[in-house]
Amino acid sequence: MPEDKPLTGNMRPDGQALDREAYERAGGYQGLRKALTGMTRAAVIEEVKASNLRGRGGAGFSTGLKWSFVPETVPHPRYVVANGDEMEPGTFKDRLLVERDPHQLVEGMILAGYATGADTGYVFLRGEYKLGAQRVAQAIAEAYGAGYLGKDILHSGYSFELYLHLSAGRYMCGEETGMLNALEGKRANPRAKPPFPPVSGLFGMPTTINNVETLCNVPHIIRNGAAWFRGLSRSKDGGTKLYGASGKVKRPGLWELPMGTTIREILEEHAGGMRDGLRLRGLLPGGASTDFLTGEHLDTPMDFSEVQKAGSRLGTGTMIILDDQTCPVGMVSNLEHFFAQESCGWCTPCWSGLGWVERILRAMEEGRGQPGDMEKLAFQTRFWGSGHTFCALAPGAAEPLQSALKYFRADFEQHINEKRCPWK
Amino acid sequence: MLTPEERAEIEAEFPHYPNRKAVCIDAMKIVQKHRGWLSDDSLKDIGELLGMSAADLDGVATFYNLLFRRPVGRHVIYLCDSVSCWIMGSDRQCSHLTKRLGVAAGETTADGRFTLLPVVCLGACDHAPVMMVDDDTHPDLTPEQIDRILERYP
Image (cartoon, rainbow over the protein chains, first blue to last red):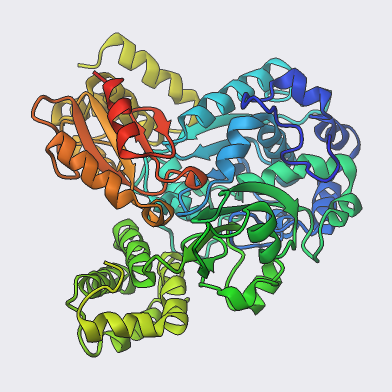
């Protein structure tokens, strides 16, 4: 395995998935063997804690700490769920992992199950990932066949069942309690918290939910150790990260790089810089629900704390690039349309405010902007803030809008004053 | 009435969940796969097997954009309308499709061949603009390519 790319270094260049034998030849299931034959649950959790692995779904919570929230004494059955509902606009990293190395995810889930004392796991995959679904289903079947899943795995006494759930759509399914409701066959509204899932989750039982990329790191941490994993990174957060870039760069794509690689290196070296004749205007560092950054932030290392210091969030680490020939108001209008459409309708700031903002932005784009719109937009971003809603959808929707009002204020005002979109 | 095939596929999901209600989304996807969409009668059929009312199932189905409570065409086109595709000019692909098919987004062609649905980010943003037709993802779209792709779905 290329030492510096544990997640993607073993993937086949022809686009096919690694099957079980190929995965094993690359060191696969050795971490599981090591854990089940020589490590207690607590030791697995300690190793993951010490690795500084932080959640790759966007929130960046310590994975080891999250696992430790399922106490020894809580009842069974317990569950682990892989969040593969990759619907954050601009994000395309988990697709690669499930399509090309599904056993890596399966092994990560068994290890998460062992660490949290879980009996059953679900891979929750978005419905559109048909190829990923086939390949994960195949990997699960192969893992059962080899005795990595089912009763008494590797004669350790530990048993774990793993199932694939292919979703029926909607962004809300990616919110972890919305996902639990979807798995229970309900509408995917979020739940009021507390209780949190480690105490009362799926079917009311203790549940741990981790992003696909997070889980895929775990087999490597157990096999090679926490110190090795920390050493992959250029930052305090351990490991590598799948970074991506989309928009009008020369080479849009996805790259596994050390955590803490700068925006400049990703954008200029890997994405090849902006297309000829275009200049960088801004970027969303980690999906639709992160604040804009601009050219002045290019030397920011892409890790959780540094991107936060720059005024945004690492999010999913897949950047969306805004160029100077694309209308920033149009881009924000597209984003807020998405959030308004995907609101589940439970919280007033979300269902009411998002729809209102969507209409204001569309009106601006169509030359019907009004004096006072800027104040209305700014008010809404505060109204959607954390603590006013049951989940992170509206707070996430506030991020690109509030930062666009800061960095692209003159563009918004031009739309209102000239009663037109200057880019049309 | 569920066909024996539909029933067998749904029952194969039962061991994966602790109760039958939890199977309902899988069950509706299975029946939709065979019948194209979920009529009131389809919901009744599923409800009988799962011990749920058609109204319960309707409440669940209407949350999810991949469950259809109205008839759709033989092929469903899912055109990404999210941010990366928008930056890469998906508006052009959308107007090309609506013109060529003679329908607005959300509608079905008169011959029942295609339904055109806007959909959120398909997770292939490095190949924007992107659409899916049925189960297949089509990257790096241009209007000319769209024409060629559509020919493959009679």
